[in-house]
Image (cartoon, rainbow, N blue to C red; front, side):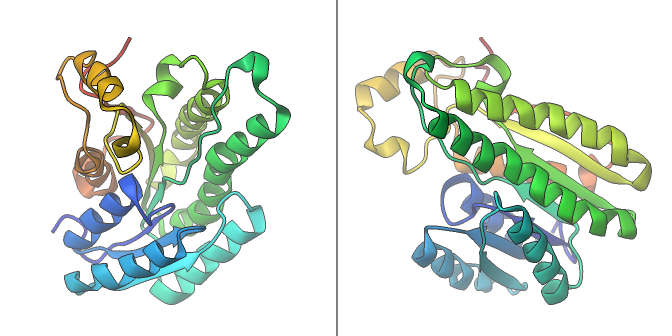
Length: 247
């Protein structure tokens, strides 16, 4: 029970990686607040599902990319749970396209949801953590943010921005015992990848040194480490969970 007695806030947790993280945290004794936006039914179902772990669980419908909404969310979670020890910024979207064809809306929306949301919630929650003189922020980047990817200039920029932002936060808040780290997943197999052409998926797998896509549990395990006291002297780091897919 690595997180017994701690309260975690996980954004974008109705499915995929976020859902796996919320479940992993609850199974390790954490009280879990989580957000969803469009996937209302899935968010409500997750709230019921996680109650089996006998910790406090509550889902919030909230838009992390809205500054005022993020501030309200942090205040609501603090009022409901009494503390916020862990923040996982996981919410994100893609609007892919080659740069020559990418329009302003595709750029702005991805930067807003993926990067501005991280600023919004980190700013809101770290005020609470600084006062408590403890806390762990885990921000979800991507292998695309580390090495780029054709057709994803907006997504790559947002995920690379998360890395620079997180390293800066780590430097600013380390003296208050507030840590900030990044996870950069590679090709993770979720319900989104199930609808892809299996020949394409197999090509991707073959291009990975470990010859498989990652699982959401692989990412959740790394997140658990960074959220827990096992990583008490780790801050400003990027953990690549990508099976060796660096170049």
